[in-house]
Image (cartoon, rainbow, N blue to C red; front, top):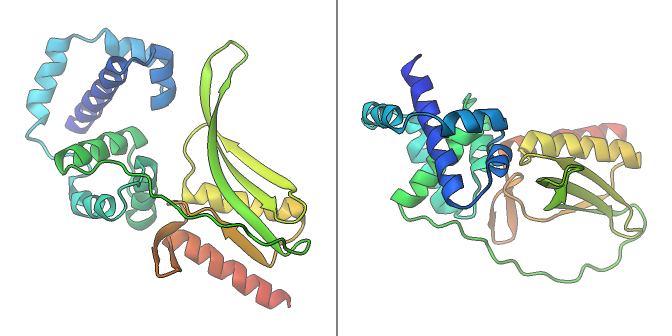
Length: 240
């Protein structure tokens, strides 16, 4: 077993233990970490002494994300409400990092604790949107819900919704994991095919998957979503 594999196993072990201490069931822990229940049981049965020896060997070793520590820290300080899933998305988008979401989640958690960066939810001002003509505007929003499976287990589902402003006709896509920017882009393509066209205007709930920041009303989009927007603009110009 390589040292990196040992580090990953230790991080997984610690995350399982933390979730169990927070009161989550073994089934829920498996769902949250995206692993099987068998894996959870296997880690629980591990000898704590062996795991302790691993942590002694890995405390002084470099972590996979240490090369990106400064940039991740700057993201969290600029955007305290940023999720670990968004950090992973940006790392893959900007640096093509090949790493698991659980590793990123644990690293982000440690940075928040070390630098005292609590996760904050940005308050937003809402105002009524005047009614638009048919086909002129589409609203795009994100959300999540918990549902029961046929065997009575709770699962968290995320969705992106595309709603035509006038008719309130809806198109939704669901995932059993956090969305990343590529998912959002593909969902746009599917929605346009479903509606057989693209509205004149799209209104977005400000989400970190598409928005980096807002500067005096000017939205600064993530690189991948900005590139998608520009490509769609070129297509529409060619079609006119």
